[in-house]
Length: 265
Ligand code: OOG
Ligand code: MG
Image 1 (cartoon, rainbow, N blue to C red):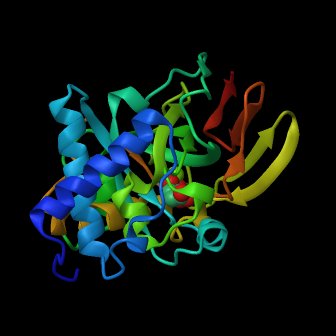
Image 2: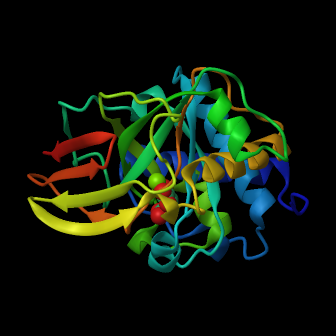
């Protein structure tokens, strides 16, 4: 990763800017409009400052998310390399609940496979096998993303600074051992209001969802972080994300993993 080019006061100021946009549900311009030389290391520095702000307010860290790990997502958002973001307890929603839209800007939903770890993961050369060995179980998941940038329009440093659009996530209720299912070739049917929005297989995320988690571990290790035991890790949207609004119902049906659904109010 390149060296950080922003000053520490710029990093803190940009984290505050992103945080305020989220709290006020007011979109902002992508950060690189003001800081055109911002690089990926700067993006992560802002993201980690944002994470520190949230944890200082009492949010609890529950895990991490891989983003832009599939071709469908890369094409949709115009970012061509995977990214990493963080998850806190305030983003988690139980499957039976309805997700409010009045505190979101322009939510989109994507279907993902979630990993729950029983051992910590770290290392810049983390492998698929290490991820599988450290995984307690996998779950079907829906992620609600909500870019703080106007028009959902950003570049890689800006989206990383905005915690990769993280907003809400829902996991299904049926844990499976990663050893009991072929994580490489699971089909998924993604529906909104009973209409099929996307069909894909789990291999869409970097060839294997555990490889997406290994990528995430490598990035976090470079940043001086790790994936602790007991973390939730989202491995990235398998299909394009779909726009949602109040009254929509979304579900993802995964071969061998069961389904997960949520509605919006
Ligand atoms: C960036 C977040 C991407 C995923 O699963 O690909 C992401 C975005 O699309 O706004 O969470
Ligand atoms: Mg996602």
